[in-house]
Structures are given as structure tokens and as C-alpha cells.
Length: 181
Image 1 (spheres, one colour):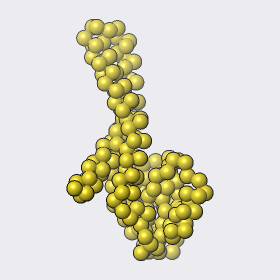
Image 2: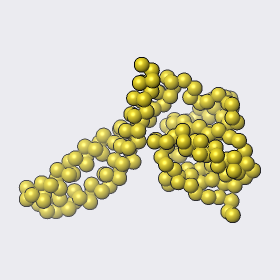
Image 3: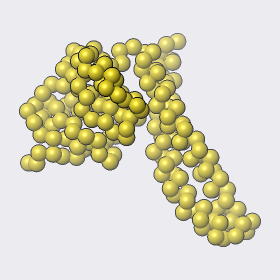
């Protein structure tokens, strides 16, 4: 068996807790997160360990940021997309987010980050669909419809990868608020 393997992710925006638990289960079997990969993770083989994994988002992480977690018992494993950081610690270490307020802040920050791209993509998608239908109904030249169709494919991909996480973070925030009431 190889020393590395790729595993698909179900989506950190949707199943963060389950994904971290899954990585912990892999660690118990001797497979450790090495780095992020497209739609998943690369794991490397080693001696089985009991580890907890945790995810944090920080766009401008510096040495102070990482030393804060290290002092709390969390070791940095890898960074993805420049702002997703995964840490490990032995079971029983105080969680990175141990209260509702900090969890809420985390999801609010990520929700706003996704919204900055998802909202313009959503508006562009609507505009492209209108152009496409206008072209098909003879109100605009056919070439406008053709261009709109091809550009819309790229816009819908962007919308899926930002809009869906945005909705997931909004759902998590609403669940947190309901528990608070």
C-alpha cells in the first residue's frame, strides 16, 4: 500500500465537524492529513495516533496567529486557499472554538467572505439568463445569446462554489441563534 492517498471531502462549509471527526478516525488508522487537494485531502501513512482536528479561517495569518494556537496545544497541519487552517491536538485539549460567540464570529466572517463573490456571481447569472432569453426571443442578436450561454457556465461554477457555502454558513448562524433564544 502506498504512503499517500487522496480522500474526497464532503465540503467543509457543510460538514466541518464530520470532516474533522473523519480525519481523526483516519489518524487512528495511521493516515494523517498532509495537505488540501482539489475537493479533498492528501493523507500520508504513519504510526496510528489519537488526534483531534480543528479548522479555523484566517485570511492574513502571521506568526503570532500560529503561536497563539501552539500555546493552546494546537499544531498547525496545513493551509488551504490561503485562509483555511487545520490544526491537530491530543484529545482533551480545549477546543479552538469553545463558546457560541466565537463560533458565531467564525461563521459570520466566512459568510461575509463568500457573499462578496456569491452576490455578484448571482447578479451576473441573472443578467446572463436575461440576455440569453432576450436573444432567443429575437430581442437581441444571436451572438449575444451564444456569448451569454458560454459565460454563464463559468459564472454558475463560481456561484456554486461560493453561493452554496454562503447558504451553509447562513444556516449554521440561524441554528446558533435559535439555540441562543
